[in-house]
Image (cartoon, rainbow, N blue to C red; front, side, top):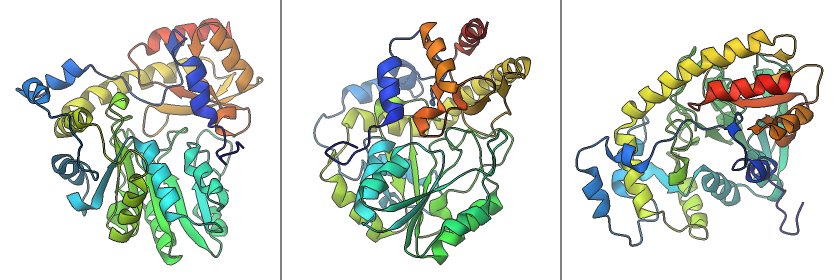
Length: 369
């Protein structure tokens, strides 16, 4: 841990070291992106509107038109229940710094994107990992395991669905039970929903903020919409006091967001069905490719198709995940070993949301050969 109390962010430093130096990314968690020109082409007149966009300060909560588009994604949320941030990462940080206190009990669905647990630890919280029932795949988390972890002083339950890195999505009945458990303990359910809208073999879950007035839904345009370069995310909750606390903390971070990004994200959300249709079609093709690949290498990997999202967590047999990924890097191919999730050395995160997946898998075949 550094002098600031922040733990090194293993996954982000791994990407910083390799992402822009390799030929193929087979560990990315986002989907194929688009150009600004392609996004503007989705609505007549959008280019001129962008050119006329004033480059002054924006409203700290997010532009009213943007918050209105976001509210339309939920069943019970109004524009005033939304707080827009400079990416989901900032929203995670601001929520935990504003809401959690030293000594609070926090349970995190694990493995997890690191900030979902590390920020709570630097707050002095007691963090417990809600681990999967087996070393899968296939993956699942048991409610009775969560119940055992929900000790007195529980302040927050942190979940992620569709789940990064496994692609798991819990059944709706289980998700409702999780929300009920958090409410029964007077805790906040914080639900990372950045992969929502990319479900395959399972129905979409209700948003956490629609299940409970205390719950918080986290989302962004980085994953399902493939627009990480716009750097916008948000939280949605009916808890006005909680939202106000997070807003006060945001005053010490970005204060307000990029005006061009807010314009483009408003456009993307208004045209989301067009973007999502293209993304889903790509993922359906790519799921077949990656499924065929790992079935052909069944002796070397434990594999099952993820239920949602563009990622999978593959068990490596007869090898160390970190060694396999190091050999792949030597061949210009980047995957993510489970060591970057502080989750042992037996799994690899695979991302299949890019157009060049077939070429990346061909390179992976060369690594295995």
